[in-house]
Length: 257
Image (cartoon, rainbow, N blue to C red; front, side):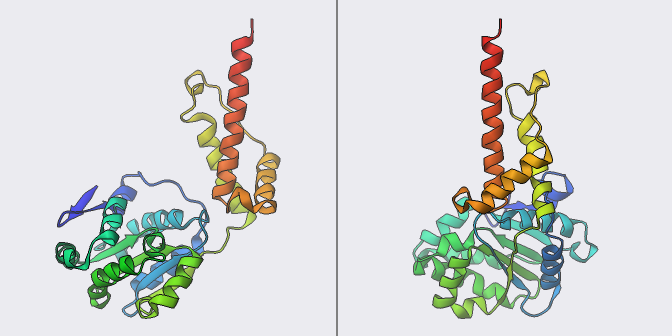
């Protein structure tokens, strides 16, 4: 974690170049569109909108990995603000924002990313006003880009209460990944969950799932929305299935003569 004028942030370009960002599947169109928005001279900020669990954070990491290898962004810092800093700013009285305003003014040649921005300001006009105060001067700096993420209902609330704020952004609505991409995501998750972090991993015992089982998990999540949005809901269901299998295996092994 780094800081600019004592505001903590994660340097996603550095994380990407050192191979510390998670693997992401898909989002090719969204990555290309986001790069074009960031490269513009006018309205070069973006709002990522999608329901919870649809991959907004995954897209941010995937774009950061692509941008780290893109010569067009060689001189750009990619800064993801720390969650603790974000919550603090929304709760402060306007009179206490001076230090943060000074800190944000020191930013240059930077893509500033605020993940879950909608969650912080949703139905809180005070928090929204604080963030408007801090970000408004950055809208007029050509070397600064801002990426915010939020859910559709949060975006709608923002449109109703601060439409002028959104006039500085292009909204990028993230569509559900196609079936083959969802399946690839689950395959990656099954490899990770089936071995890494499990008590039997050192003994070489891990669980694998056939494609038919993974496809069934996807179908269940589509049929029963209460399981959660894809792909996050499917990953949770897969994790639960693997945990159940590991528990059954451990009990059988323990009771075997």
